[in-house]
Image (cartoon, rainbow, N blue to C red; front, side, top):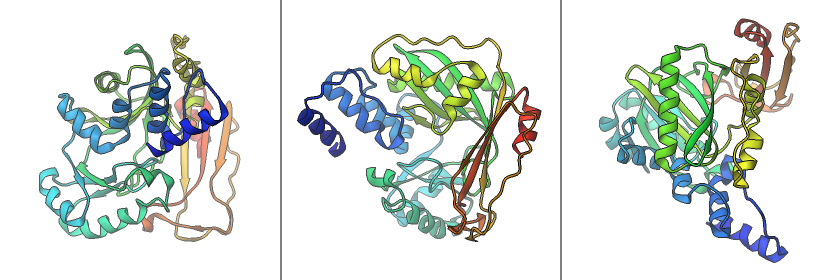
Length: 345
């Protein structure tokens, strides 16, 4: 609310009357919704965006709407975590109410682990660690979901889904849920993927997220599809690039058109134009990064993109610290999944 008022005050001071308001940044999704509503500009309802932004509210609203959802409970203290554990059961996941990139998300398997896990997550969920936690620092403990995870990118127009793209996530190095990689399009069972997409669309519609580009993460579990989280924004990183490479659809343009209340202009390819692999590389051990070199093995790939996140000489955390330091991301597009995977190693 404070940030939205600051934006409105800045616009008024400059005499600016915008035609649209939008953001691609998770930290400002709820701010953007409030500014759009105050100015009478197109956007998703504030209540819907807030429900997606808060992982606690996502679970509460899903239950209210009768959508399949794991057991979950808000946690503000270690005592509350102990009290909630029998209801949720083990294995469970402890995560921040507000966050991104799996920061502070940890699997817990026993009562004995709760104190150390709580302390670890609390050390991460602070505005000093990341500005995203200015919104709040409550935690959530919820039922662990088995199965394969997917990123589902949707283009919504007047409450209907006009395009969807699915990326298949690779297993994470639990107990952390830091992403290890993905590929698009998926090679999982088509019917299971279709059920995941259907649940994502129904969730967006039920929440009231009726326009623009959404990024919803979900799993095909042993009990059917389940939502991991709802994001009222375009997917981060190079997701928009992957969708354009594979399907020929520009999510940035789709998001801009929605903000201007223009109909979407999406004409996806009937078949995938290529396969994209994204691989994340983390520090193998805790210490100081002495050297970091990547060999070019991607000679059969059509395109290779490297995003380096760490610098030689800086302190890094390895898997022993649970939340390892990301060193780099490698994105490769090739004719098929086998070639893309091989080129990304």
